Image (cartoon, rainbow, N blue to C red):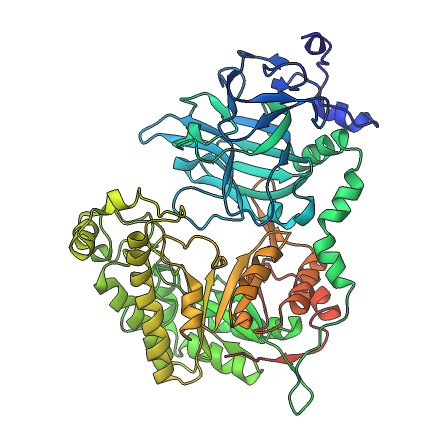
Length: 622
């Protein structure tokens, strides 16, 4: 307690920027709780109750600054959030030294806390996930699961041999319109979500440190790490303040910052990629750009769009023509989106046919993009039921699968497309509606809701649940691929997903891409990877485990979200460097970028000065 009495009440941000010599954090006027874990497990400073309730957690001498708390199997501690944590807005930061290796198959809960409401929610920081699967390799910060306020990143798993060192984690959050939650690693933003969330839920349990028990967990996912210097403040720090906090506590921050980017810089220092060329000497490489917007549906915009694609060096255009709320092209099977209906009625030409014609005239392939199972309106109430995952159709309804397959095949039949792209090709969760439960019972002789709670001996999800989900999604993929290629031989089928190696548990939402590749249905899986740090270890693991590594194409993003939630173009230099990295690391079915609306002149210049300085023609490894 002597140390607590000496704590400064000056503003933390000013302390961090002024002090040149790194040191342990100190409290300020915004600090709610500070625990050094030097002499005791209780907080050294707290606006609420400083006492920690301890289960197995132990003090050790080898902390980041002084001592630390050991959080292994069955070891955790809790604090009362009253006065010590403000759900309206806050910052939580600590140092941790994990006892894991990358990749870690097991998931680890670092923090958890139950939230009130009906249904109740939770607040959690977790490496990997326990609700089903699909979260391996990513760190999740869930501010309020019922408000869908969560952010995740795979950056931690890119640290390689340095993973087991001390790292600084920071969480920030705020409720409102907009609200946000963000997670930072060693002073740098890993992931952030900004959206309207209103008033989030309040704590109904204590804050658990070292276990998932606060978030409906069973205590089976310990932190397995040392933890030091826990700080909770009553306001959300800015990016600059988080960076300053890290620098103020880390003597080697410059070295660590450079090392954090070594995955990129080391590869870019290597030799230029060796491209295949055709008999005319042209580079053979597919360069895809995805466009989620609909300005292309106005033929007046087509010439400018095609010119922009050419100037940037892209030769594959993937426009979204179905976003779950009607078509963006003339169709007899489904009305157009409401916003396009009037303009379509006045057109004397088919905008999709015109787009394809103009792209082909300039050597650009067109692969229409379908958000297969996204439900953007209420036009088809027979395709879902109470218990269907939110904003999704029920893929277990044969009539929905017939409908969406027929819509996609209609496009392949009527238009000179080169490929087709399937996004939202997943259930989006487990349908618990009465039809689904009855059909599951008839198929397996067991109860859907009971099976969903079961695990296999290796800890993987129940095999019947995986099969149930896989069969529904696979039916769509297989029919589109096989029937589509009968209509148009050579059709390239791509899907958008988050690939995981076969050594990890299968997804429980039906999106398990590797069997689709092995069956020959899918040519390309675009791994959606929009952060500043690419998930290179994950891609390496997947490509190294399959016979068709060329089918896995990492898909970087070219945008950022500001602290206010505004979407802005990413700096051109990093966009070009990420594409160059993909060219060098993962040759095969080319490169891709998301998304067209954020393609800036700065990015175009950087692409043309770097990875796209020479034009290429599309090329696919089938």
